[in-house]
Image 1 (cartoon, helix red, strand yellow):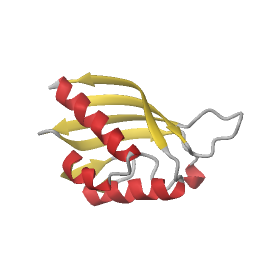
Image 2 (cartoon, helix red, strand yellow):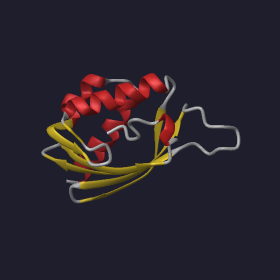
Image 3 (cartoon, helix red, strand yellow):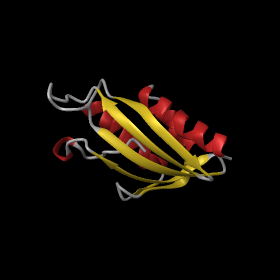
Length: 124
């Protein structure tokens, strides 16, 4: 199962970076829960992704580390293309996904992306 969980998590980041909003329907369960955003459903993912793509047209999420155990993946990423200052490091995220039946069903996460510019800090 860990290979399946890893593949789903990787595909989610690939879809985000490719601006493939339609992929959310395949990647997330219909009743997906984003704990950091307090939202439910695939439409909330599409809205969050669209918001980040609009706010930061050059945004790319780069996976730095991924640990998988049973039905969960913990992923540390950096966000590129988000107007970080010269002295500022790229913002980062730490997310944990739970996968069920090949789809992401829950997400927990935190981000160092500037909260004032952030209405949807996590891609998922």
